[in-house]
Length: 202
Image (cartoon, rainbow, N blue to C red; front, side, top):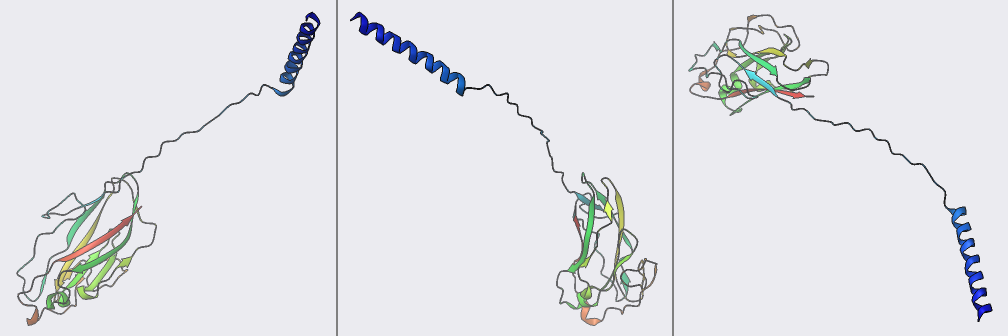
């Protein structure tokens, strides 16, 4: 019995020593480290507003000018100044302008003329309301935050003085007399709303 016990003890001791040896061979210490870069990104808000003397909705993106009329066969609304303000926190660019109206097939819509001068002093459009279409702008005309610019709009018929005169699209605006025809009898008693739309992007 004593020999058996001593033998078991010897074997147990040998196995323990072997186990410690294996642990020493397989386990190695490794230094580790993580690094990181964090940056918060906050998007701004686009807010281009309009204002004009006597208009309703001043300080918003859609204003309504004072109504005109009843008019005669030859008339002009006058060169109405609209101030554009960039309330955004970043630069914005004009991408295009468009003109439209209610009841576009009416006699009045077919016979009215419009003059629009852009914020850079050039004629955007000067001709029949019915012939107006979207006019795209190229890049390179940024409005900085808090910047203000003016555009001019005029609705007319007949030989009237406007900021566009008789000039066509793309010319530097020079005030002069239009060469449009007056309204005829078919336009009597009609009423439409004309809308000038300027599109923006950033």
